[in-house]
Image (cartoon, rainbow, N blue to C red; front, top):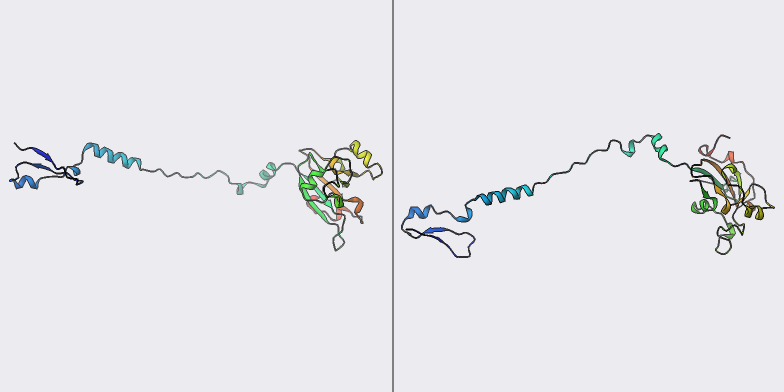
Length: 214
């Protein structure tokens, strides 16, 4: 009886042989065992192909892009803002007032708005230790309210004390609150009123978008 033998060599392929070596027909029908497909190998091959299958994600198109937003919707999302016009004490070379336009949310101190917006407030007293940094004791942050006093908080006791000899429309920026968080309107401020050398009419220098109906 013939016996099935395994080749013990280090070759990657193993061959099955029968003991009787005289039959050439049997030797011609030998098949390498490593190439015989089995059910297990087929399952392994199938699962490996399934594992490598990738699903491509397709991004969805939003219903409306920001570029397609209507102007009305953009205005609705913008918070209420107070328009402020700051007039410098020194005129422009052509003799017109030097006006700087800013917008800010109401409920803030006028001093904070001016400093955050890079608007000159203290003049020669801007260096440290030359002003009280908002305490209301040095009176170096004086401004003149040209328009919009109805949007400002009333004078404080410190203002009444420090500004008793000044015009009624002069304020201390550190003591003045500009409106409420939902306030809108226009406030025109003359910077450094003690140092100004001119008079001007705000209706002649403000652009139309900053004008309000009185």
